[in-house]
Length: 386
View 1 (tube, rainbow, N blue to C red):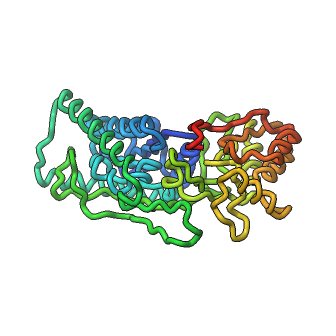
View 2: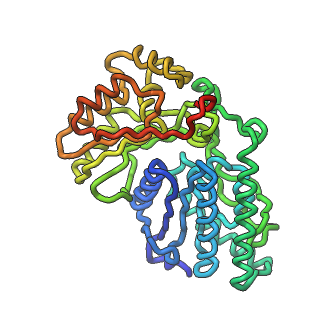
View 3: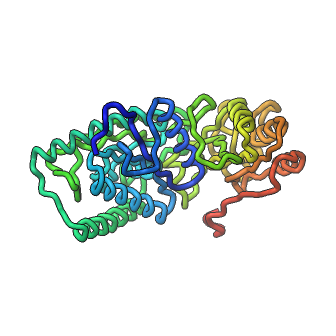
């Protein structure tokens, strides 16, 4: 289906994974709408489809791969000129390998690029047209028949998921990607790769010899965090919203990949969060869900000359007690949000079991708008892991 020059660009978006990923999707949708792009729920009508992926555990990676391949099948059947963008944690985690495994994809974008989505969408559509033109000029043989297509999808999925599992077992230094989540601030400068050289395809519906390589826009270590001025279109029901108070994580948990994917912990300024909360309450939101990788760590990275090596409970408590009275913490944030006028409640999500303090317990007890609810993700209970 060829897009009419008169109608606006149309984009479809599939959001996978956690609430934090959903906020990234909301920012992308808000940015696209601000730039005059239409959002459609019909994949057949979309000029570009974005799959915002999750890569936290094996099943999430498999779901992401399934969704990407299904999107490619829909395109092949109904709209071959459609561009496909893979965003989020999967390309953030497998930036170098993923384009080789998924030659169907026209562009890969990382976490730092969510506000650049309109530019990437337009570049993707142009790149898709060139890839098709190149494949036609080479008269590449096409594989026809539903059975062959289904077989190709199954084989591709097995190959992709298997290779990702292999990569999961490779240490960062062995794969050439150094895990620097715990290096001192400013020790390294991470550059954004916007394009790569032609990448050999494993299984491509297009000719792999001269076809253009996919667009790659993924920083090795992201540092983006949204602020109140960032365009956003909420995808949750009207009565509740997710408020991302921080991004990234500093904890060196052996079972968790988040610091390598999302970068070091970085808190939003408290005033910026409160401004967003005021606007949401004015829109009729009744439940503010505070989210980050570790909400109890909020504000600790804002202290002067801070060190990241405070994951242990005793070090964390010492760091909290050493903060000046005016410092931003999860307690000061909750208290200010609780003081806002309106009929609403606050739910605190993604707290770390090692970082619950007496002050936080007292704060929740004294703030009537805070839900009497404790959210503590427990990934492991083995002492060696903890």
